Amino acid sequence: MLASRMIGKALGKGVFEISREVKEAEMKFGKENVINSTIGTFYGENENLSVLNAVENYYKNLPANELFGYASDISGSNEYKEAVKENVFDIYKDTFDKAFIGVTATPGGTGAIHNTLKAYMDCGETVLLPEFMWEAYKHLASANGLKFETYSLFDGDSFNLLDFSKKVLEMAKTQKKVLVVINDPCQNPTGYSLSLEEWKKVIEILKEATQYGKVILLNDIAYIDYDFRGSVNSRKYMTLFNGLPEDILVIMAFSMSKSFTSYGLRVGAQVAISSNKKIIEEFDVASTFLCRTSWSNTTRGGMKLLADIYSNEKLLKKVEDEREEKIVLLEKRAEIFLEESKKFGLITCPFRSGFFITIPLKENAKEIIDDLKAKKVFVLPIAGGIRVALCSVPCEKIKKLPEIIVQSIKKFNK
Image (cartoon, rainbow, N blue to C red; front, top):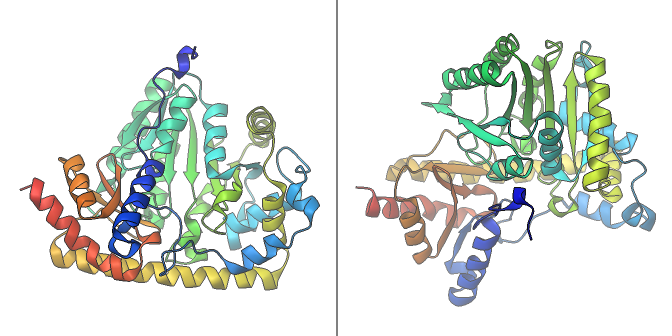
């Protein structure tokens, strides 16, 4: 009965399936005896979902027409779009004097990624993804009839510019179009963030690629507000997007999920940047069409929430102060994990900030993960390793994790 394009399409055993195993273990052994490092949402030291109180209270008090009414526009309200720009660009918002900017509201960052792949790639073409990645990139590519290749993410403790350049230029020459995904800053699943100097070299590579074809840079910034460098420094690289060649289109995938602890509201946006006004006009038309033919529009209440936060300095300050408390706790958890990892010789991918840390594994990953489950420790398997969610594990349990993981690795990898 399935359409041929859907045959073989399946998500496999992902985080939601593992969550069921975790709950069973917690019921059997007690929550205090289980380490659940699979959850990609922020949990407090009490292991309960931790939200920004200012966001929760304001949202609950929105009038019924704002919570339950349709959005005023398919592509999002003007107030929401302006609020998105305020968040994404921060103090750099007015520096884009050689660029045009378009914004379209989407259901989370996932919607932004879906729209971008659908609008800018033809069925059968190939997208370029990072070697360590959020697995949904692969599924989104597949759902849109696309193939994918990967670029190596690291050269030692740095971004692998050599392999990135090689893959981008090869694809530009053969396909005449490159759509490359860079999840930065605070990459999921490694926690890596490119330096400004690395970003400058990335931009030079993309400029070189325009000799052979069109270039679309899809920059997923879902975790940007948890960058330990702070709001201003985490966004400095964006100034490099001003005045780019016309054959480079930058699309940023914005999400309210992590920054405003509003995961289930499903509110995000595509933010497009180009030095060519016509390209942004095309973006506005295409993305609005895709919204209407995919999910119609984004939740009005979520958009109203962000718009009101950025029009109320006092409320914004409360939100940012509360978020800073979570960042401090996240830094503490990361420091503990990395110190213990060093003590027990656990190798991790280069980490800078964010929700996650990755342990690379070249072999016996399944056996290691099963052994950890037997010890009542749950981690997320990813291609090339395992992901540890700093965001959801309390400090006391974080401290135990590296030694337990090392023991399981040594058991199978001599």
